[in-house]
Image 1: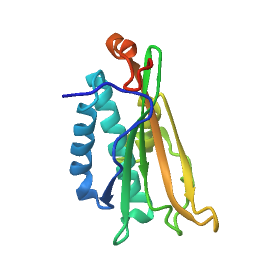
Image 2: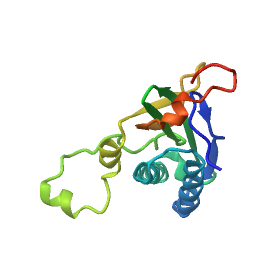
Image 3: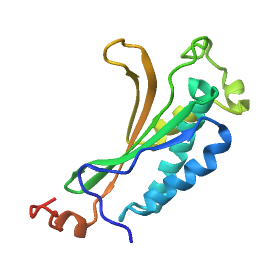
Length: 174
């Protein structure tokens, strides 16, 4: 049975091989986790799943996750439940940038080349569907060597009246 969101809820982090063939499993497990959360509108679940798939595809295409033994980690949490809205945060962590690849495209595309392209729209899609999103490096504190890149996206949705007025297990209000 689905359970309501509460501040600080975190699903267990899931690690996946950095291969394109893993994407269906990645999506199915995310879908299952989203179904366990009460009150998430169907269209938002679809948006989260699509953004997660794009982030996973970026990780296995543009990072060291694609190398033998590479991995992608997916995290899901509800860090904030404030009044009338709940925030659902998706994080996809890769193994860091490939050393030889530029981080940004070297030239701007023309409208025609953009329309004909078969890839390259993932971050724009995430930008359109998520309420907030960003990318940050995950570095080892002592050496500052990059261990990975975190792409995070937040999605907000209305908190159900029953959820916002239900008492917390600690006895206080949520």
